[in-house]
Image (cartoon, rainbow, N blue to C red; front, side):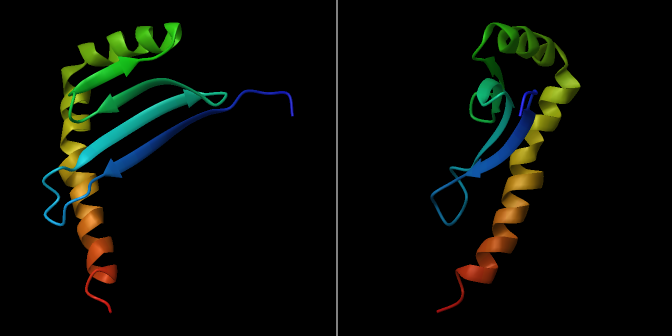
Length: 92
């Protein structure tokens, strides 16, 4: 009951069937408070707490990591969306 809880979520958000509006969100939270988030539309990490701002500044300095996060919209989101959608969309 008394402890700390850190977690990340990886979300792919889109509304068109051609995935042209696909956005990848990589969120880091601690004790139910989102500290920072990468948004592929913004192209960098944004901090939402004092600690999150510090982490975002450090993450944004690592260009290799930022490029990896930017690539996730294709490698992770589109790939999985195409697999999932084909299993559902083509069924009636």
